[in-house]
Length: 107
View 1 (cartoon, rainbow, N blue to C red):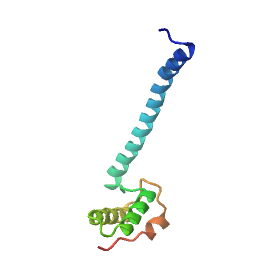
View 2: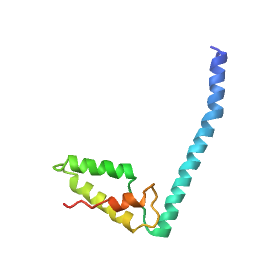
View 3: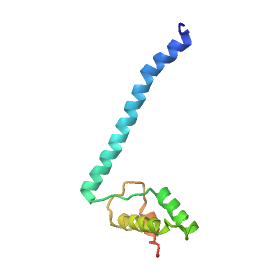
View 4: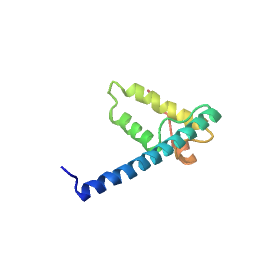
């Protein structure tokens, strides 16, 4: 069974494109990890949640007060808020206003 011209073109395109895309993704990932390591070395830590993720965690905590994992979620939320207040330069795109508006959750 011989491949058609479309089959050969598809294989050739895959051979040429996929390694290039993989390399770009790897380089981008390594650069973001390098930035994280630099911030950890300079500041001692980084925040563990993006603004969106921390907001979703807060919504989950408010919506599930009787869940067995809510105490762990509160602890992680409060830890992130405290860390954000201590950092000079957050990893994620936090504005000063967003950080100031955050409040810890009492248990």
